[in-house]
Length: 183
Figure 1 (cartoon, rainbow, N blue to C red):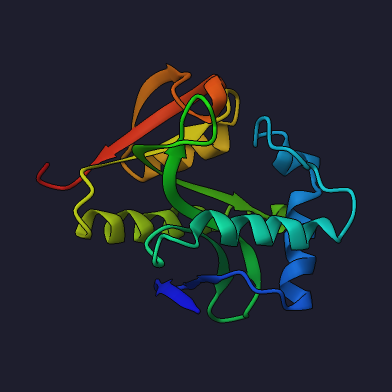
Figure 2 (cartoon, rainbow, N blue to C red; figure 1 turned 180 degrees about the horizontal axis):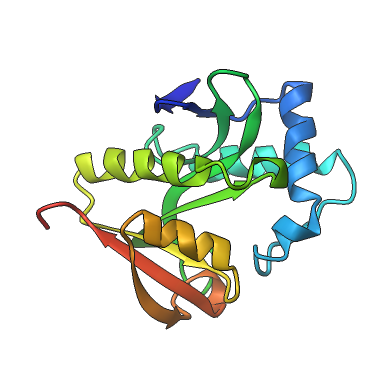
């Protein structure tokens, strides 16, 4: 299902189609991606079957969200190539199990898709949609040292608010925030 579209991109649900599962594995088996994803169990993936589990986890996490929050495939409209993942969701707190009231946007792109502005374009669309739904602030959290993702945050007009340990089990993360227009 298509969640939203931009000039160049389609954000849609990841599916259990073999091509989607292969791309999930290709993205999340790469150390150059997973090194920035902190203490995520099962990463980097070492077996293509893990893509099925990852997809199930995303679906379970967002099952009650009615499509407002999710972890979605980012597809280039012109080519149909899935370039990565974009997400919008409540941040997990220090215990990792309980959601906070803080909303997060994020992105994980395949290295073959870096440098084309896809992360910025996808996240900008998600920010606009969530602000239109009434959310006043949206965060992005980035592993210290991940300069390319911090640059995306800046291109999105997000303000760096320092290193914080409020989320993801107390992991130290660079926090960026964007306030709704007029807010």
